[in-house]
Image 1 (cartoon, rainbow, N blue to C red):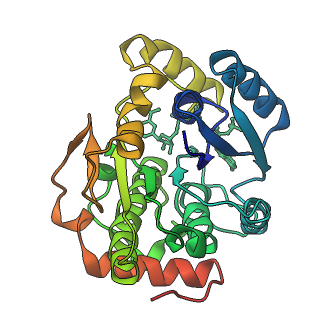
Image 2 (image 1 turned 45 degrees about the vertical axis):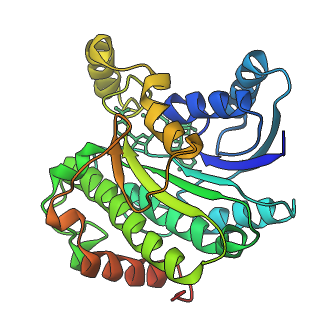
Amino acid sequence: MLEKNCLLTGATSGIGQAAAIALAKEGYRLFLVARNPTRASATEKLIRLKSKSAEVHWLMGDLASLDDVRNIAVNFLSFDCKLDLLFLNAGVTYNARTCSQDGYEIMFAVNHLSHFMLTHLLMDKLVEGNHDTRIVITSSGAYRFVSGLNIDDLNAEQNYNSIKAYGHSKLANILFTHSLDERLHSAVTTKRISVNCFHPGFVGTNLGTQTPLGKTIMRLIKPFSRSSAKGADTGLFLALEESIENSGGYYFNRKKKQLPSYANDSEAAKALWEQSCRLASLTPID
Ligand SMILES: NC(=O)c1ccc[n+]([C@@H]2O[C@H](COP(=O)([O-])OP(=O)(O)OC[C@H]3O[C@@H](n4cnc5c(N)ncnc54)[C@H](OP(=O)(O)O)[C@@H]3O)[C@@H](O)[C@H]2O)c1
């Protein structure tokens, strides 16, 4: 089998860990982003237990720091290998308004901006070569917690509501998928490249369990949740399935879903792209 490389964020827990195990079994060489060495080491043991031949490289960094995101990209590029699959999955929820190391609202920063920046820094890798390239983004049905992108308050400084701020970051995942699809397909004509996002369903993971209350709530509702493997399934389908020709879509249970107009809004997606470039001090790519 030809070597395939995957860069995955949020591999140390939940949906990302399940995806990493599945991709190792598929023979992918894994480049896994993590912020916590202990959790990285435990995850690597698990991956090796399930797939003895796994090749795992850790790209250590905190996605709440744009400097760390830059280092993660530099570290990956130093391997000088092709990139077949970029799986942008890491995510957080917070109750109280919290800022990233760069002063941005943390859910917007980790769930969207870090992934936007990482993609931007890896753009040359994504478009080079003739091999198929897939980009998969873990969004959420929580995008429905908001009724549109608030471009004037991406940093959630006014009337902070944690549920809405999380929903807003997940809407940003969808709008980013939309813009990235448009831009990639106007730039790349010589290879197959797809970018899609998905909702994993309600999955019993560590999400939201940083607080004692969150931990208790997750313990109570976990029996009604999906396993992490089931949560990762649609993402893996988008990553692996030969028949995926479409790009720019939002999927749930392996099916493309219709989105309300505010989540399918090219103008909002363009504004988010431009503003994200500014916030991450990136030169816009047309
Ligand atoms: N669980 C659900 O029901 C559900 C539903 C819809 C969408 N989602 C989405 O699914 C994705 C995965 O979430 P999950 O449910 O699997 O949650 P999880 O178990 O908490 O896993 C989140 C992953 O993201 C990593 N991460 C968080 N903040 C980070 C940071 N600042 N820097 C680097 N890595 C960071 C975590 O690392 P650590 O191990 O160091 O914490 C962990 O590996 C998220 O995007 C979430 O929004 C989840």
